[in-house]
Every structure is written in C-alpha cells, then in structure tokens.
Length: 108
Image (cartoon, rainbow, N blue to C red; front, side, top):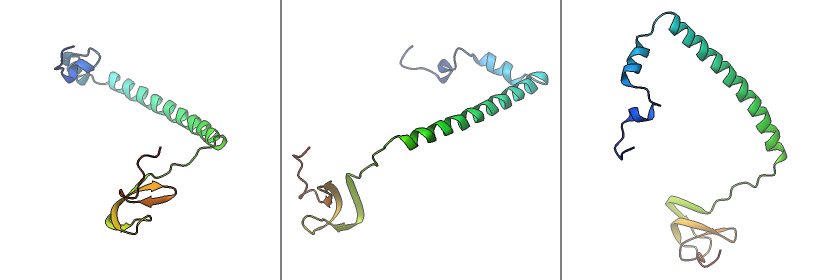
C-alpha cells in the first residue's frame, strides 16, 4: 500500500459500487438486517452481563495496590512541604509534595 491511502482501502475490499448497491436494498433485506442486528445486540448484552459477573469475582480476589500520585499542580500556587515556598508544581518525595528545588532527582 502506498503512503497515501484513501479510507476506501480500509473497508475490506468493498467498492463504492457495492456501497451504493447496499443503500438501494429494500424490503426483505432491510427487515433481515434489522433482525440480525437485534439478535447481535441481545447476544452482546448477554455476553456483557456474563463478563461483568466474572470481572466482579476476579476483582474481589485480586489485591490491587491503589494508584499513587507522583506530581501535583496548582494554578493558584501552594506551599512546598520541603522549603515553604509558594509554587505551582510539586513532586512526591518521602510522602511529601516538594518543589523542583527540593526534589532529589538522583533517587530512583
């Protein structure tokens, strides 16, 4: 495929003529399509319920460590817990939020 590709190249080989023929479909084809879509939606809903039940069981048994913040920003400025200066940006260090000057960047 060349660097310049049209969106039609990603439609799985469907040409614009095929798209026009699909649009001209009437009557029984449309009803069959609607029935197939409703059936697919019902199956998807059933699968979603089954997955939700499985996910709930898995979540209850897994010990997940909560996410921890590493950075904080305040547009109005707030106090650095290391030096007391008013700053907008602070980073976590030893359980405190400190400014760029107080942060030990050599630590892992």
